[in-house]
Image 1 (cartoon, helix red, strand yellow):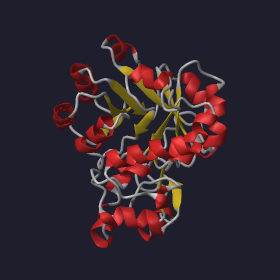
Image 2 (cartoon, helix red, strand yellow; image 1 turned 90 degrees about the vertical axis):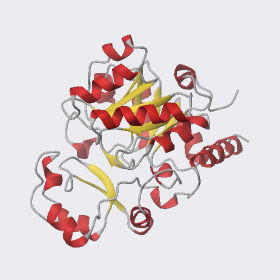
Image 3 (tube, helix red, strand yellow; image 1 turned 90 degrees about the horizontal axis):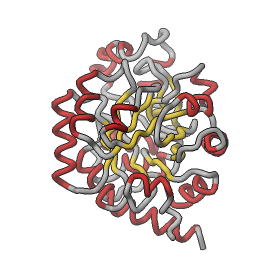
Length: 302
């Protein structure tokens, strides 16, 4: 049996225990569909979309592939009731969320597999989900932290996965600077039943991250800061972000982003989410990247 066939992959009905992380704003239905076609779990980040556009995105994925996929939103109150209703009405195969707990009952009753993000073992215990996504401190994007200070929740993935595995009975998916098959193999050895890769798929042909975003992740180290949106996120430490970090205390999420409009108009967009491994991203079509990762995992097992 392949190392990438696990109880987690069986639960989702996928061949490979690999999840493409949701990346709201840049991951397209085409990216999610390509990953799912390749046997992994594509994700569609819908947090920034209206309910109508979210529904259109879901239906576009279904037009491209019959394979399982996931839709991601923020936990209430950061997502609207209308967005959550679309997920239920469309009966998507899997629903993932971050920023806190939510009531999974209506989703389960609709036959939807529920994945929730935790950055500590305590958060994992607080989630009522079918799968826990363990977001290590290395992970790019917004932090899912909802208990305690975010600085205390920057737990290295090598420590976080065993801690959460020891606390919950559900499958655990590891997320954080996993960029290749060797990283996948290491996460599985830690006890994870699957992996979630975000930065690796930012560089995929089907992703709409602009060239400036990719170049910034290759050029700059990353940092976790709330300076852009008011909520901690790991991004490239660009001059734009440095200026924000040196400024006044951020407003609460999401009002802080509105404060950035004058800077964006003057200096251009300079907030580029990504994990600590992002500089190693490979510019490949998503399906080819999935096949490359599988080959690397097989090689690591020899």
